Length: 422
Ligand code: G3I
Image (cartoon, rainbow, N blue to C red; front, side, top):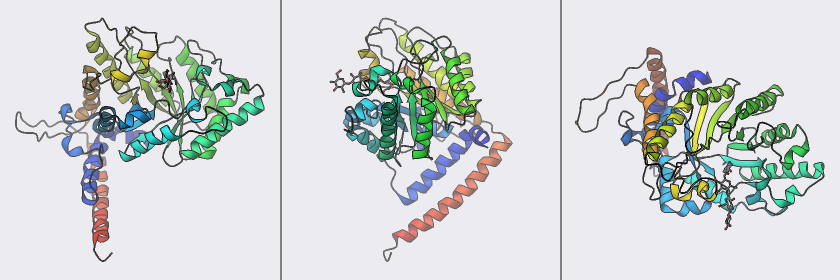
C-alpha cells in the first residue's frame, strides 16, 4: 500500500496540492513559504520552487539552518521559499545542548524549530548521539564507568526528545557509528557500552516518542570502499533483532572530481528500501575545484543525478542539502579542499546556480512524465498534454473526490466559525 501510494505520489500530490491550496484559501491566508500549487506547472520548471516540486513528488527537500541564519533575510527567505524541511546544522548536537553536565541549552535549537513551524517546514532532529568523539563533549569522553556513560546517553536522549516532543517528528538517533574511513566501528567512547548500545538507543527513543521516525545516519558509504556493505550489515542486524528503526540517512558529502556512479548509488539506496526501511540523502553537498572552468556544469550534473536517483527509488523520502549558500558552507573551514569549495545550490549572493536548475529539472521530470499537464501560461506556445495511465487516473479521481468533499466540509465549517453570532 505504501509503495503503491508512492508510485502514485506525483499524480496524487498534484491533486492534493491543488485541492489543499483551494481549501486553505477558503479558510485562512497562505503562510509565508507554504506551497501554492496554482503557480507551479512542472512542465515549466521555472514556475516552481524546489519545495513545490518535492511535495508533488511526495518527498521532502531540506537544507540546514543555524539559529543566526533564521534572522538573516537572504538565508531565511531562500530556506522557506525553496525547502520544506530543515536540519539544525549544529544546535541539537550534544555539545550544543549539554556542553556541561546538567546544563541544558536549547535556545538556538528552539529558534530553528520555531522558524520551521512558522513556515510549514518539517524538522529533522540531528542528532541524539554522534559516535565520533571529536564532537563529543569532553566530560562525556572522560566517563570511564560504562554504567555512568549509559545513564548519560539515556539522559541526553530522553531530555532532548522530551523537549522537542510534538515539534520534531524525525530523529537521527545515532550518527556515524562506523569508522570514518573504514568499514569497522568508529573509535567512539559509545562503543565501550558494548555491542548493543545502538539498539538500546533506538529502543529508548521509541519508548519516549513512539510516533517519531527513528533514523541511523552515516557518511562516506558512497565513496569509502566497503563501507556501504558494512552499513547494510549493521542495519540488517538491527532489523533482525527487532530494533525500531525507520530509516537510513546517507549523508552524501561528495568529493571534488569524483563523479557519481549513479547506477551504483541507486542500488545502494535500494539496498535499504529492500529491507523495508526508508532511505534519505541527508547532508548533500558537492564541492568543486576553484580553478575548474567547468566546475558548475559538472556540479549540476552531479546534483541532477543524485536527485534523479532518489526519485527513482520508492522509499527514498528526502533530499537535504547541507547548507543553502556557498557563503556559509562547513567545507570552507574544513581545511581539506581548496577553497572556495562552492558546494551548494546558491552562490554567495543567494543566486541560484546551475546545480539549482538541475535539481529543479530533475524534480520536475517524473511529474511531467507521469501527469497530464495543461500549461495555461500566456500563449507563447501550444498547451502541452502529457499521458497518464488508467490506474493513476482512477486513483487521482478517487482522491480528488474525497478531497473535494473534505474541502466542502471545511468550507462549511469555516463559514460556521465566521458567523458573527459564534
Ligand atoms: O560555535 C562556535 C563559535 O562560538 C566559535 O566562535 C567558532 C570558532 O571556530 O566555532 C563555533 O563552533 C563551530 C560550529 O560548527 C558552529 O559553527 C565549530 O568550531 C565547528 O567545528 C562546527 O562545525 C560543524 C561540524 O559538523 C561539527 O559539529 C559544522 O558546522 C557542521 O556542518 C558539521 O556537520 C556535520 C554533521 O553534523 C554530521 N555529518 C558531517 C557534517 C560535517 O562534519
